Length: 80
Image (cartoon, rainbow, N blue to C red; front, side, top):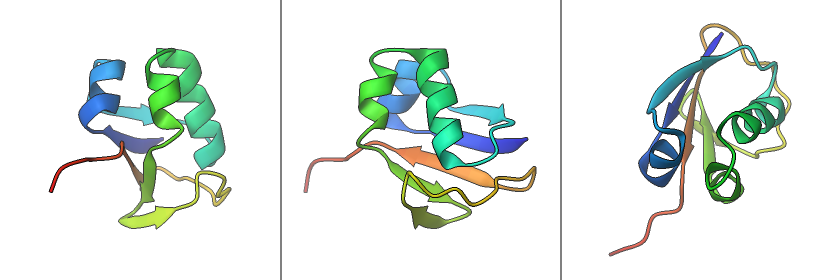
């Protein structure tokens, strides 16, 4: 089970900042979370930055997620 951390608007939409998932890769994880949390999480997650073990990745990246993997989802931030 990979560790998943949610921040800002994604955390608010999901009602949690931390969860675990058995998803095999990022696209499956995003699909699982969108189904689990519905709107507005689903639409907010389409513009999120996905970070796997400290490295930004493409949301279509199918590298395997393992029990030692940390996935962070960051919504766009504004401000200066």
